[in-house]
Image (cartoon, rainbow, N blue to C red; front, side):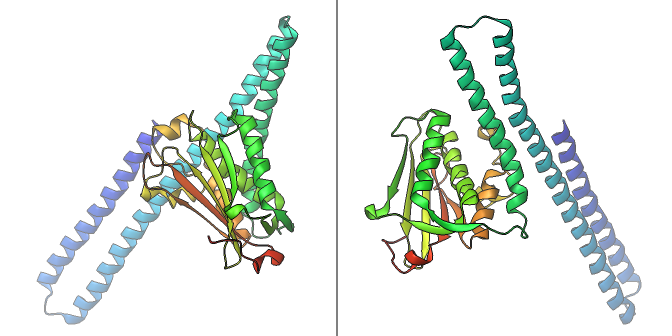
Length: 310
């Protein structure tokens, strides 16, 4: 209901702006016909008309942007509320069951496992919201150290496989040309969050048939590139840039079915930029899978020794 009301408000203000511009033009044309001999007034009238039209257009643009931004904020609040409420409700249900019923040991251990998973999900959502503020602050300094990116990726893969119960061959890590360790200079927690977000997204959007590959390569230009490829639903070309905006999620049934906060990819790009790197997405279209690319400057000792192409 709120979304429909806002769409009507947007349409109303666009129509109002167009109507005002039309009235101004008609009044101006009539005025010119009555005062066509007065050149100075004609010149001033043109300037006034352009100023009024520009003002109305800018006002309409800013208004539409504000309405869309409010819609994204509402969607974010709804998503976060769901992501927080669902695991809390689940944990509460299992605790009440343990409190009021006699449960055998095997069942009890299963309850503990589910509650721990829900706790991890809850903490992950909270950490993601908090991290958005941290990576968005230019005043927060990076705690840089030399990072073995391959070991970090393997740790993220192990966590995702356990969390989402992915078979051993569902997520793979490959070093291009079987190269040795690939290192970068960066903030371990931020880089880990970016890589983990990309792997988690690839798994979640793959559905029941998870087939995800993470591949690293070191470019001659001194950058380490991580490409995470999945065989999921793909991304429309028009959405490849928008998906990195804060709170933005690709509209459609898939976004409704797969819950999220709309912050993961914003964090990924923010982390890459804070480290002097880049992040982007590639996809041939719907149904053709997608590839997310992270690029970081290589650690100084490795920058002069490229291992393969990018």
